[in-house]
Amino acid sequence: MTETAPEQAPEAITVVATETERIEMSREVDDEEEEKIRRQKKLEEALEAKSLRRIISAYLNYPEASEEDVKKWERSYRKLSPAHKALVPHYPMKFQKLRRCISMNSYFIFNMLQAFEPPIDLSQDLDGCEDSNLDCTPDEKYRLDQRHDSSCQPAVTNSCTHQEECKHMREPIKGVLSIEEPQRKEAHDHSPKNRSADTRINNQACDCDGGQLNHDHGSVSFSSHDWLDSSLQTYVPLVDVDKVRCIIRNIVRDWAAEGQRERDQCYKPILEELDSLFPDRQKGSTPPACLVPGAGLGRLALEISCLGFISQGNEFSYYMMICSSFILNYSQVPGEWTIYPWIHSNCNSLSDNDQLRPISIPDIHPASAGITEGFSMCGGDFVEVYNESSQAGVWDAVVTCFFIDTAHNIIEYIETISKILKDGGVWINLGPLLYHFADTYGHENEMSIELSLEDVRRVASHYGFEIEKERTIETTYTTNSRAMMQNRYFAAFWTMRKKKCAK
Image (cartoon, rainbow, N blue to C red):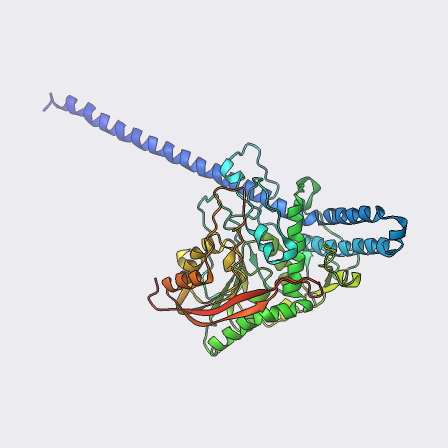
């Protein structure tokens, strides 16, 4: 025994040492992985800050870009002969009126930005952060949202830019919701998804870090938000400023009396259908829950809430989210703001007065509209946010209005809608099939699945939907009601119900 003991001891020590080395190596690998994840997260946050700064810069560059338009028109006027100038002597005065209109639009925009609280630190930069995959993500969503409006045709370029919206920015949704809040997704996905924010209706005065917003459109005293510092503002291409102009036109559709006709065409059939499908919604302890993907500036989601539903709007575009949050949360009275949405095009105008006419917004006070407790707006990519397991079978209704053709893959949209609906839940849709990525050039990896309406029905049937109602509705989209050209859609309108045990 005394002879073998010394021989066994080194062997045991060797085994222990090998195990210790393995543990240390494992720890080193874990530390390296954690550091890699940390660097990746830091890079993504910096890219998010860059993207959001670009959006804010597009809003801030609106006055200068609009002034350049007026100067261009003035240059053309000056090239006229004296005899021709004499036929339109009012033009110099029109240019001055246009500048005053631009000033009023800018006033609204700056007040909106002053109220905005960025969910991330915008002072982050990309020094030392290089990742070709992250920095070359196509500018997807809003480039194509605009195509419903003939005056908002986007410029398609081959430039490689990071996504304009921001990922991983969802904050907790405030208020009472019977449905579970979508959870933050921490996967490091390089696609332009998961941009998130929340909107809360409130009836509080606008108080932004000590700055007072004068709602009678008098003088305004702004506090110096760091993220509005000129050093953080960047030059953006004119196509980005065009998105701002399109937002101004979208405001008319959702929040002006002039947009009521278009809302009656698009929103009223949806609201009437919901009203008829859920006649006893006020009797239960918990109202039915309705999701509105592609909620834009939030009016449809608000109207659904006013019907007595728990209503959540989901929106991808931070251009939209910044504006909808301002109107929903900071509006004090109807008609509080005046904008001039039609000044940026001289085409198809019946008169200068039509082009220069003011629009008062909002037409209602959102916080006094009679919303149901639990109304909210959630920012982010529809598929990524609502594919979470916590969302499965949660919603009584999903309403899509001018939305399903915004997908790269419409089949994925339909599959997601089926997943999140309860058995027996309803999908109400209104809109065309103007596939927004169909004409995208310059990005080899761009995907666009463009189904016919017949194929859409077939795919919906595969995912357990049965058509209960279907018809065609003629409508416009962000159209100037006094213009000589108005594009009209013959939009598909349907109600589909999810069968039990759907695939």
